[in-house]
Length: 633
Image 1: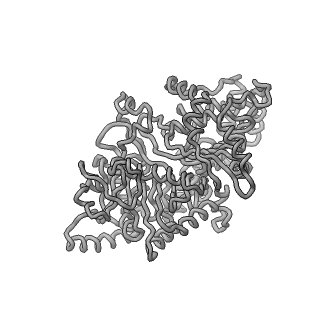
Image 2: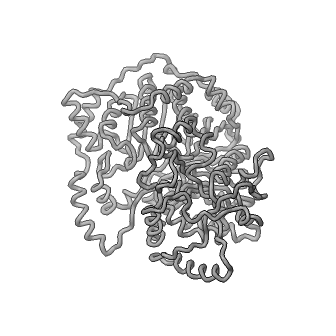
Image 3: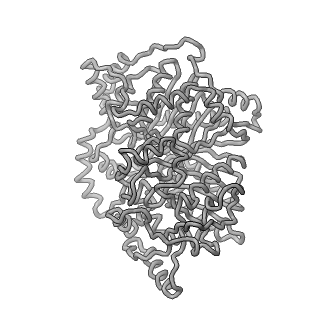
């Protein structure tokens, strides 16, 4: 999510006059072409082109996924494709499979991402990609510029890594790889439409046949490796030639777009490359100073073991028929009326309109676009209503309090107008240890409790904190959508998004079970109407409705809804949610409509687990004055 604030038209001119010249002066005007040519020459002279393996398969690691691809190809026909699918819930599993598939690549690896960090996970994947390039595999990486690799030295070393490795940044600000604060402000003021459109796609593709897409970026917290804050996220691995071709076509479209800029065409990287050449510096990419080597080697050993991969992943893969990969167009925001530019959004919208029995969806940011609001309102107003179960973040779990503030503002609308059953994820879910192998060490280690980062709420308790980042839909137990789309205005109108639509009941059952587990009482609070005397409720509702309708000064503190926690000894009685009989009732999401809901739940307030501090005040301020942010957030 981008922390971008709207600016009133009365002050726009003055801010442009004050900030824009400074930004342009700091950033320069356009690509320094003479310097770019020098950088090209420096890279050509320093970048090795020796291939370490002369075999036709480039010394590929034997992978059981090759057998699945061969089986899918042999069984597929143009009208009846076959694919194999793994739903990846654990972050470390998702990272391990990426490393395994990099080593199993025969000819090509294409990666597209929104974030690439200079931490253990970011370095490990880059190091493995460089090794693949050295053995003869063609590697292409496309990362959104604004939040990726803000270290020019790293980028210069990547540019010189090997002739088989190419790296581009999407939509750079003022032709630089790293955006300084003044440039950020200038980008908002002078070129808001272009600056605000980001490439949010996540794609990992090997040999045009095995792909991973979902919500994860390249940073420790997406793979359960951060010692302060980790994401509960979801990826899907799909093996099969048809979907592989769709992913390849999408990647090629972005790679060829003018906004995808090679490193030697970025002025700050240019200067470093030319300066390094003059000084004779050819230092390779080095790992972070505090890298966790035992963890790295443990993961590498498992990734290199075909038997381990077979036992834990390919043996669990589901054979499915239809899998579609969709991606928005690279220039989506520039052509908002072009249906081809918002194909993923259009497909999701149609699937929701066709829902008949139930919608289960998970999003980290419950801020709905106008298109989504209309669809959910229509579903709720049908003669036979379509129930909607939502798993999303609480303020204590979110990484973006300013987005949560707008979700908080419209909770009554979500509950009454759309009939949502909302469950907000706890920062310390009961099942955390099932997702992080070294959770106990992290929870009690020396680094426990260092959670006070920008955008995150200070909590009452210490420990490794978790937040939802998965973006998934399950419709009528038949169709699953897993990708980067947050079902919000940014995903609909600004960012480019991508993901899989899988038409298979077994996959839908797995995704649905995972979302409902995140929404279960031990992992989430249930959002429900507060208990009040009827006369007081009527008065409060009138005042609260008027306050919420205001674009500014929505300051009424007594909201319609609150967070509820399941009491010890009680069990959920949601008969609508089907779960295996062996699963305990306490693991079911609790519906506010249940007859015993208030008897078995305790009202824990608006912002449970959050220490009452400036963060709470900020949240209420954004709720009161931030209605205009909805179209951006």
